[in-house]
Amino acid sequence: MKARDLIDELEKVGSAPDVTCDTVKSGDPDKEIKKVAVSMFATVKNIKEISAWGADMLLVHEPTYYDHLEAGNVTPVTEAKRELVEKSGMVIYRHHDRMHAGEPDGIAEGELYYLGLRGRVEKTPYFASYLMTLDEPKTALELADLMESELGIKHVRIAGERSKKAKNIALCFGTPGGVFELLCNDGVDAVLVGEACEWQVAEYARDAAELGINKSLVVMGHIGSERDGMRLLTKRLSEAHPELEFKYFECGEVYSYTEDKNS
Image 1 (tube, helix red, strand yellow):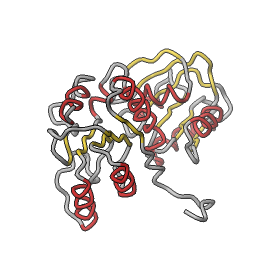
Image 2 (cartoon, one colour):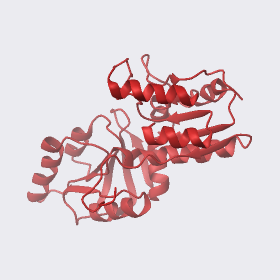
Image 3 (tube, one colour):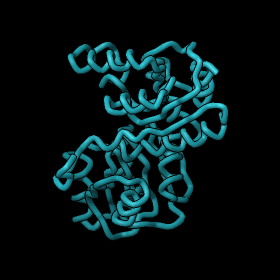
């Protein structure tokens, strides 16, 4: 199989906008592939590890060069990273827009799969944001504990109500649209998000709780809120293509913490 064949398969998942970031970032798409790595980010550390593993191709969800469309920003960091990528000989393909446009959204599906949350999910008007009615309501604290235990997120942050049960939640994994609008929605008790504007969204949740209104913002961190979609993608590609070797590479959370004395 060529890298192009796998890309064609991925591009059947969902429709992409006219201007999409789902493109080959490096390498020759006509390259024959046997070993395919999958990760959230192509970090420098990951590129080195994936190259040592002998990958022919790398599927990533987020930008490699710090810009959504990776429109050629040139700095000493981007140039050193490009040199490392080119030396690896890997084909790097970004699977983002179609991953979110699938039915269901591939990232949200992976997060819910590994969290074990069950309920009815429906679309919102906002990109990559969904409403979920939980079969079993949970408090924000219970949701955060679940995220830390099942997804391995180091520190989940909560703004607003911690102890009241939330039945109707918004899924805003990563940095999608509509986070503030969904939190303001009378029918939404809690918003699960990767990244959010603290001065706006977090403060709204805090004041709402002080006023006795059941509103919670549960902040997972960008990587913690999306990587499990890529983990599930790895699992499914492995099942669909036993002739290829797939491996998920963890890029780790971007922040270190004061307790990480040896990091």
